[in-house]
Amino acid sequence: MSKPKRKDDRLKINDGIRASELRVLTDDGNSTVMKRAEALALASEQGLDLIEVTAKANPPVAKITDYGKYVYDQKKKQKEIKAKQNTVEVKNIQIRVATGEADLQMKADRASEWLNEGHRVKAELYLRGRAKYMDKKFLHSRLGNVLEMIETEYKVVDDYKPSPKGIAILIEPIKKKK
Image 1 (cartoon, rainbow, N blue to C red):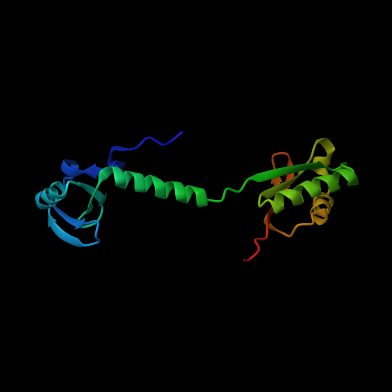
Image 2: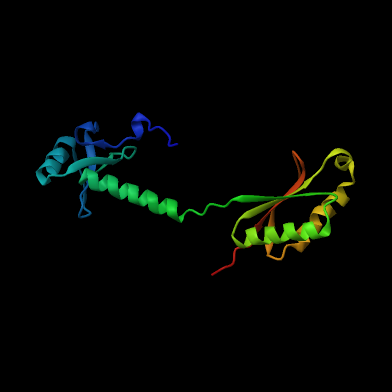
């Protein structure tokens, strides 16, 4: 769901521009300060549109270009930015105090796999009943056993801290320099 655009977020073009003086950019890269009427006349003479690019500048910056091409270029830039973004998911492994060594190894292997894919991993020691009142050092060491079994290099993002279900630690892979 996209955010609804506020009225002042929309592009102002041609007669929608209210500033009396504008810094006008042309497609060839020149910029000059001129009256709004002159800029509109220059744009219509070239068969192009006058688009307000930066309203907060003093004087506001406008560009003489084709409106459709300008909107297309802006959308293209947004797509490129979105494509370059790296989304990192937080994956969870959950263990209990009584989880066996084989199961711990299996969960550690899964965590290694996720770290190799570039995800963060939240290791959570699930505490129920009497386990909630066990010695903190013991609980930390139990969670530490799983972390020792992880073969991929990682760094701790969020150290041992209470979570709604028990104790959790957040780790992420160490990024290798290219």
